[in-house]
Picture 1 (cartoon, one colour):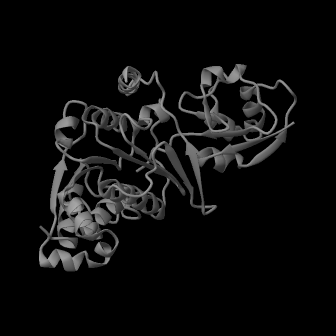
Picture 2: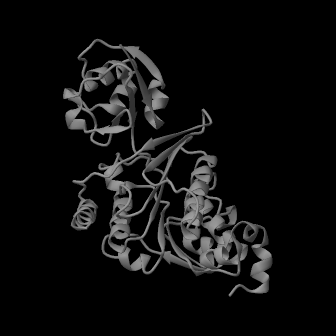
Picture 3: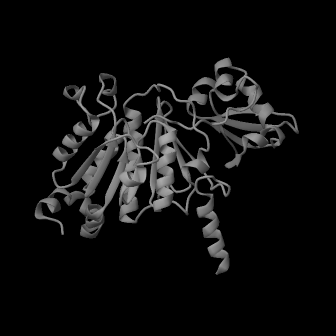
Length: 252
Length: 92
């Protein structure tokens, strides 16, 4: 049940999706991997939208060079754990939600546990090896992975629904080399908000998700492209999921 | 015959995009991208390794369909093809 305070807080969005939609958001648990450039807008917008439980994981401390884009963290937070800073800000911006901050490196051995019973995973990471770990967790748990990536003025977003869409490995089978990437804060702002928009639509069960669609943003040209992406039946990560589904379909 | 090449992200910064180019019949996918990329050594290096083969993370698409890097040298381009070449964007 929504409290009177919640009904007031969410009044303007409940005009869009009613009590039922708001209850769905309240009941949801979203895992956000990363409290950096993408994790900041994703978590802030999911928090104010009233996602009932947000778990946000990061292992780093706030550095001055993060502050051009990681809007969860302020100048006073330099040197603090990003998780502590994130938890404080998210609880302040919406005291009606539950925030779990996990100060830990996401690894193959702990990822499934960290994600727990979350209804979806937001990829707000800065590297592909960890993304692949979460891709495996999403496939195993059959929960969506909301992918985002940025560099400079460019960004990409797609929504991965295991069994229905290509997985991250189908789309990007090989990781690019690691680099200190250039970035201006507006890019993760735009991409993170698109990821949060996908999460909200998914939880509400309405709208058209970026399923099988890789959305590519070019901020310099102020232009967006969409590339249709397909499942790879031989994918090392999700190939068996696809195969099982196909076999089941054939039996009918 | 004419084809259109679209680069994305870092590749676009280095090589531009929406490049319309005339190609001879039978030209293979990899030769075409090599020719275009050579216009900027840095752009070429971003896409190809020292042996002149596509870097393993490069994504190639022809009219919205994925072309495996291993098949790029034996896939001919055809009139009106729209070709996309892009890297995974990794930052977050």
